[in-house]
Image 1: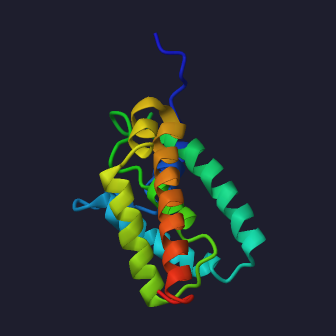
Image 2: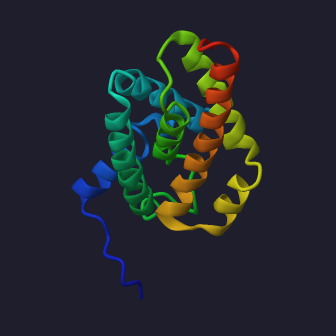
Length: 163
């Protein structure tokens, strides 16, 4: 007998809305990519914030994503179900730390993050394989975002501040 209480219908609805990034994760085609597009919209909003506030909001969103992803694993079957895409949102937001928002930066950040998220080089793959629950769902994307952030900041530096 499981000691986990089922979610109420309202809680279940809120978890699904949050974990799927407003329904993006329910896309029948490439839900992770669609979730990352939602991340671009959030990046557009957050890029207006001073860096310290961007980091505070990002930390809060990562904590929220871990909590929602953990609850969503009770709604969606299997571990790290493809419908859970809040992790893509916070992963992209991690990759875009201290980046200006413009269409070129958005496209390059999107591509760089998706490459790391899909390819999962070490240690991203290790995190993906060894952490479970909400932490496991979210933290591999955050690490992919950190890798993306480093690449994007280096590209900005070597390209004279413009992507």
